[in-house]
Image (cartoon, rainbow, N blue to C red):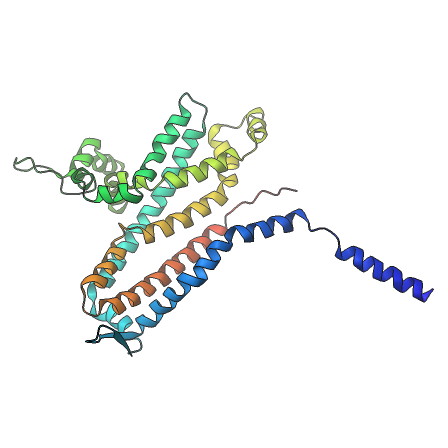
Length: 327
């Protein structure tokens, strides 16, 4: 009997081992095969570059007459110089952070508003979606490089406008504000000057906000279309208004997309070529004495600030995210 029991146990183990992998495991394996080229390139190419960048930030670069260079270890001197000697870096960093704090909510709110509008059934809905996504295409690659030297684009993003030769000519920003009477409107509403300046800044920066809202709008559209129409039908039967439906159904259901879009907007804003901090670090790298190692220190401090900002945003929004149970 003992021998038979041993044989049965061994047979059961072999049968258990031969059990085919579940669908989730197969998908996981397929996912790893999909990202394998990126992982290989990241380890082979980017990891050495990252390591060299960290190493350079703690050294001074000494160019040799033979054409090579030597690294002289100086500890945290590059970081100290960036924070306490080069006043332009800290000033630019604080100014950039303030601007991003104002821009990120505007971009997310605008993209959500447009996604809700474009999700409704209306004639030409596909055309309108394409129109709002065109700026994303125009602001990438070679077209973006062409736009950098385009005088009309400079005019649209400038606060100086185009001089007409007349005395007292208004700037581009003042022309927009004058046309919409935003300052007068808020003055009549008796709101704080800080809110007035914030709204005025958003109006003046509307071109940039629209350009940076295309991807977020598509993500919101995908989230809106994933909501079961039966939920909205139940709300209409119960007599819920559109306002109540939005705050009780739509907003909680797409709250995970709000988190995704906010994190994406933070990363996109911090790494954009138009970001003034990135431009300042690039100028230090090209023009400053020993700029290669100094810009490395600036870059890593900036990177840590970006990580902290993303962690704060993700942690704060995660407290209010609603995840629908699928079971």
